[in-house]
Amino acid sequence: MPQLDLLVIGDINPDLVISGEDLHPDFGQAEIIAEHASLVVGGSASITAVGAARLGLRTGACGVVGDDSLGKFMFDQLEAAGVATDHLRVEELRPTGISAVLVERDDRAIITAPGTISDLAPEDLDMLGDVPAAHVHVSSYYLMSPAFRTALPAHLRRFRTNGCTTSIDTNWDPSGEWLLDDALAAVDLFLPNKTELLEIAGRSSIGDALDVLTRGGCTVVVKAGEDGAFTRSDGLMIRAPIPAITGFVDAIGAGDSFNAGFIAARHHGLGVADALKVAVAVGSLSTRAAGGTGGQPDWGEALLWAGLEP
Image 1 (cartoon, rainbow, N blue to C red):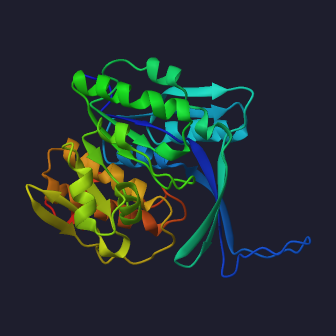
Image 2 (image 1 turned 120 degrees about the vertical axis):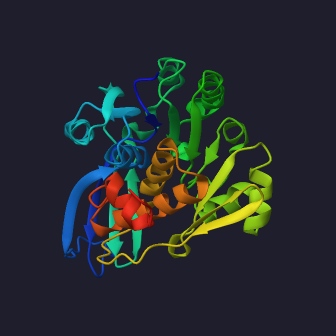
């Protein structure tokens, strides 16, 4: 039995979340006033890991931080959330990455200083055992270095050969190339949003995109914002609407919380349809607080909002 239920590999960094009504900066040393600012856990991998730990999974994170105050912040926050940090590497000569997230009502803009975010290397994968966890999830694929992305599929196959299940959430591709074939063939589960789905498949319709991306046998679960989420199982389309949750603050990391919810639900033995309901509930509940982790629910609350029996 592996010591971890879930290992999340990817971007480990804080977010500086700044919210207000009009955050469009004017250069020329002009100053604008924000309503609120907070330093919180950021990075798709970090948010997914914290969310899964709150849902009861023994969770670890694999990534790189700098030897600085932001790196220490991430170590402290992950450990406080119950996330194992054994596979975090400290890069002494590089700064920890950080994203400044400007939030205006239901929209946001992100400015990222990558720092160590993309410093994961093939050697970090080499250090992982054949069964690092029951499930291995990869976040922010397109922010990783070319060398890491090239090495990743072989390691995902290694994990699967030894009994692990695997998943990936690419997030946005800043390069606009949307190349994923080798990695997609090595995972059991792909968790894109609707835009990412269509870009990666190179198709204009959801049905055609699913036809393309499920050819290798992987399950594709699609996040569709206010339309909830959907997947195809046994040839049938399954959809879960979002619950009527009040107190929206921001949607930062909602997709990452969704990932944690789906992975946790499957780990706890739920079928695909019920896992989709839990994932949508977890993602929706995460919007109740600033940043990606402050509003994340525990397992009981997730089941309640999913309309399932505890």
